[in-house]
Length: 369
Image (spheres, one colour):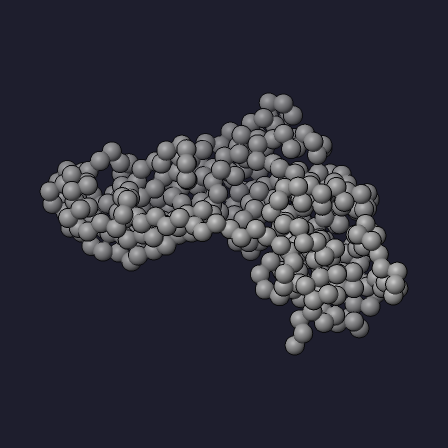
């Protein structure tokens, strides 16, 4: 089946047809997206918690959570976060440990820390409210042009674009752009073009419609579902058979491999954790003790400076970060007599409810009972 064949009977009302020999220029093509896109979004928009009540705070939190995270994975986190921290004042006052526990599993923990920093600024300078200004939103920690555009358009109806990876992919295909979408200059140019053509009275639906088409139809992985696309007749990549080469991206550098030995240190019913440095990878988060390289039992006991302990192998695990992979060998170490190192000794319940450990250690934390 040709996945890029347009289901014309279903989408007749959505398609914009060009006269032969009178093809649209780029801006005309972008302008022509408005009607089909808004019609399609009204019919196909997903029901999402932050859409049902698009208050500025809710939009902000959802947009930060959705960075690098699937929509379905975000839903329970969003509901729990809103229940625990219902407004900007509560976010500004929350302890870092509590905040990171609420964020545990979402990854990219700097996002959560920037939320708190921004909330503190909002309380001190804006009476605990997000400003209805695209430019002012961009001055807050953790808010770039996309997030500022999303908050401004969705929560305040301000006609500014919100260009994320979904939008970059859709517009690149529609306009047959061979520019590298990972370049900031390409993103800025697309923002300027969309700002010119987007409807001032429907900024929220327009931006969300583009994002939704990218998420559900012009999908990030796999062939685009052109037969379901409201922009199919406008899309030069579809017309010219270029959807497999557009969008263009610079190949990513190979990730660095790091071998680790992860220890579940047990002593008198408690488990050892420690806090990471406040810089570098996973800053200020708690972790299970770990050692560089894949060590054997003798090397582990020597590193811990203990004479006797019961050591049991645990399953190996791998965790992928953006630029590095951890290949982990695990061991449970039952200490006898004195404890080893400067650790915080906690119960399994405290690990579940109080201390935030990164998902990198999930294969081992789930074994702690």
